[in-house]
Length: 253
Image (cartoon, rainbow, N blue to C red; front, top):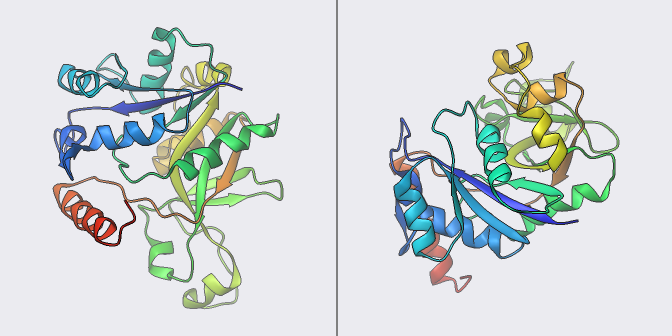
């Protein structure tokens, strides 16, 4: 199988305009993401609607493709980008452009989900551990999986509800899984889901992956023990700088 990584990147952001071009340890955020993706995949591209991002990527030697500014979601942007790229890829990996510390092992965990021929879409999860406050956070979607590792449901609510126990005891009773927004799609499936209308479950939870589940697509969930560090705000960037400094001081980079 041939894999291609597409990194959607927009300049406009309510909480952090220009985030992809923000500097982090001497490199812009999008460069750090791109280099991680390119290190493990057959090809990698940044898909953007902004000439500044496009020029920055090509200037550091990366590959980029211009896309429409009118897409409803990153998935739609990725679908357009793949259509513009002369690639014979079998699998498209969707890598978030604000995850500069994404691990190549995480990317490979999603790729390995496609060793199962019944996998149409793949994503990643990580055990929550014993922190009930983290589990209750609606900004950290939860995944319920079946015995074969396929997603049954994603929710901002705590799933499952553990009956007969106090909430602080729930983590000991069930291995709650946090969703990490890294996706892979078979190429033909990507073309199909990009044309699906929003579903009632998606609208209710504001989770795009519920559109795919509600339309009957099978989503395999790979597991990782590596926590991601995303950048949504300027404050997150400051925390990322501190984290990068610690890695440097410990000799891990």
